[in-house]
Image (tube, rainbow over all chains, first blue to last red; front, side, top):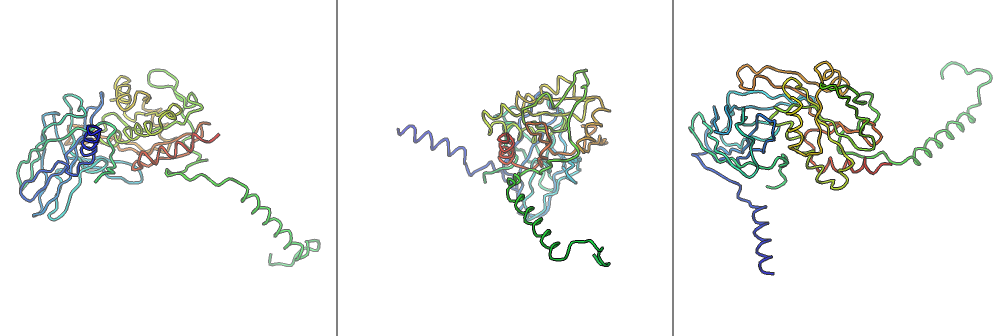
Length: 153
Length: 209
């Protein structure tokens, strides 16, 4: 019985863990970098994260990762139900605010995946900030059916 | 009725009575009609568009929504190289299937490629199966794809991305269209809807007889 209780606690503890991965770099806090697993036939993927900036305005000017040939910065706009994806030169991280990269919005695009991204794996992603310089993250790959609308938080 | 009334028109009290009876009858019939179902998705029941799919695909195989009679059918227009929107939509659709459990046997998800030049049959098959092995992908020649998009009022446009390694992207409408078990168009699911809201809407449609 005790084992079951412990097992349940560990299980629920892991599921509802309040401490999503956080990395501090100067005045930046980079929270919960993740990517959706990709399926065969999908040449590109996307990575997302939340960036809290407690200092002066900065911007992501480039990114790189070993999992794909090219890494670019992209965003989406929606007009009348039509989704348009466009490359952006930089992702602004305004001072004193939190910037969210998430499905349907800003994202790090991984173009030319060398292999499908597998759920449960992780990969290094280096973001280069104009002021803060390079920050290396560990991106967790979530299952394909990962909710884009996070009910936890 | 401003000008003088004709000689043989009913008298005023009689007209009032007829109007009153008519109103009462209307109220009675309205009250007796079952309440219109409420959906989380956009209700497009009776729309004069998105009526059907009945075309020969790029490999010469006829593809008809009517082949799935008796099932609730979901149709989404997208492309396999889409890194975010299409995977999100198909992932949600896969979650919906899981939420429906055994009811999912009566649901069919169809992905129509708006990028038939890049999405080969093999790519489409692997792509849709990656989300759920029950999903199916269709690709047609460009003219047929354009015709289908027009029928569904789906906008799509190939946009060159001059500085990107991706070369081009495809702007497209991200709605999912839902047909009921009788093959009638019923709903347009918005991209941002949760799996729970979609599963709930599909359950309502499945429960209709």
